[in-house]
Length: 145
Length: 166
Image (tube, rainbow over all chains, first blue to last red; front, side, top):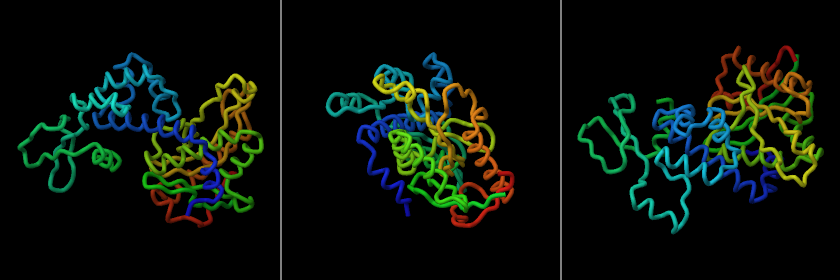
């Protein structure tokens, strides 16, 4: 059962603060997921963007006030879409920004490793290879695979 | 030597937050700190941290949203500075410090903290902040000595621990 003092404070959070948290922390978490799924670290992202590691650490700290330009740059170097705007950014989904998927080998006992990453639709005839969506990938990463 | 209990604070599908309560105090360290900061006019900072806790517990887990405070798994919450120029200068330069122990991305033990004063360079330079981090460090050492892993903490809720050295 949640602490009463905590729950009372939750009811006092202004909408602008909960919106800010969900945007900044959500964006940080999504970028983190993408990096982990590609076996990249923050230093790799820093190199792609020509930034210092400390800057990336600040961005992924969950309280950063991202500029549109920063988000656009991150989207470009990682080839992902972080922000979706109804109507005005839906075309990008139709033009190839598909859900991110990872393929990896499984042995009969457990997941073994990541082989490579493919966009949706790439077929693989090997019985031991399975395609999962990004949500499943997060579960695997958190389980330590 | 002090006696403490670990209590559940807020649990979500992605992370669980616990608090530390000294048996000789009226409430847990996080609540006492939050109440002190609210009284001192920093309610917005407290509310931001509460919002972060909920978001981590419900959505993302306790990721790199913390600043590392050195050994013993002690971290602190990242809190945005107030950049509103209409506010008093003190408000912009007195960042609140909420310390915790983080075990991976799914277990956080909330501790105490305080307000970092201007001129304080390191945590060790300010008595209340240094004490808060040392207390958490000792608690982490005790749990480690007892071979209690982070994910096992829920099995020790409401049990009394004796912490040496504080």
